[in-house]
Image (cartoon, rainbow, N blue to C red; front, top):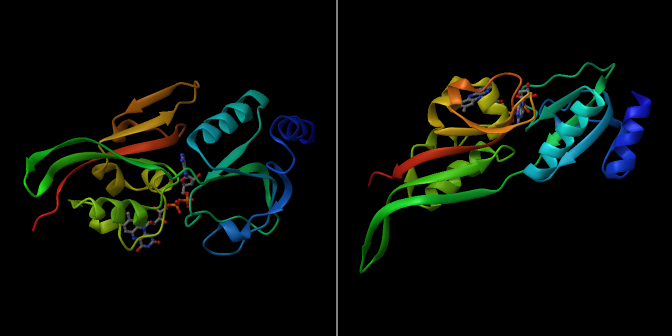
Length: 195
Ligand SMILES: Cc1cc2nc3c(=O)[nH]c(=O)nc-3n(C[C@H](O)[C@H](O)[C@H](O)COP(=O)(O)OP(=O)(O)OC[C@H]3O[C@@H](n4cnc5c(N)ncnc54)[C@H](O)[C@@H]3O)c2cc1C
């Protein structure tokens, strides 16, 4: 483990891969121990790269979103903990009418990277007058962590992009996402908010 973490540090830099790191501040409970190593992925590219490296090096890893459903014993965890901070949002596939008042969006697709908080996703949709995600406005959690554990978020998603256990980036039906997949982003098909 020590040697493999050293390889990772040499590759990504010692300031990015922190050794023997207290991760309690990254868990909603505020309780937790020390992780063998800790890395913050700030983009989806970094998330994919770190997971690929861990798999190549056969290093155990744990991805955390907002860390609301993760408990670590005070003895700590013998893994690389990856904090997912990829949080870009994109709107595309807009359908609507152009009038004197501007473009009236009737339907659109919103893609959220997996580290985006559900609250921010809901607010982004509402800013574009798109409805359907209001239920997320007051909830904790990221898109990735929530899709991983909650059927209601799968129900709302249209498609999910994952890194599969065989190392492919694939777009899947939300219900076909498996526990071995790393969630990269999700697309939500939203309709104009009802007036
Ligand atoms: C409408 C709604 C209502 C809710 N109400 C409540 C409530 O009343 N009480 C309550 O306690 N909770 C509630 N929740 C759930 C709460 O939002 C969860 O805490 C949240 O969904 C978990 O997200 P997280 O980012 O904190 O996940 P984390 O706790 O960080 O991770 C959860 C799991 O997902 C895995 N994971 C994280 N990111 C990824 C990824 N990118 N790819 C693969 N695996 C990943 C982790 O390894 C872990 O196994 C509600 C959720 C919704 C949507």
